Image (cartoon, rainbow, N blue to C red; front, side, top):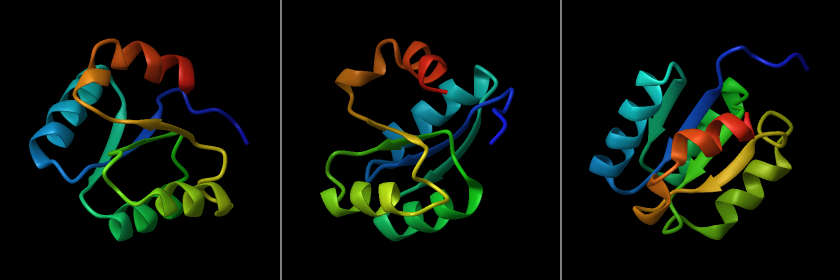
Length: 98
């Protein structure tokens, strides 16, 4: 699969303010970002857009990460955990993951 010039990122978080803050930062850096607020939404989006990176709220069920890794459309994505503490240096980690 050919690498994109701009990372495609899916954010799945139960915290709307946190997800929107992170999405805004990543979009300003030139990334394409989809935001979901449920495990079902994350699975639906991630398996249809072939993301480079999935940022997961650790409060979402651990089974979600297993399902993402098992699906051919999202198996190659880097999965990172999204917490308030992980925000510092997020753009740098996303660039290295993509």
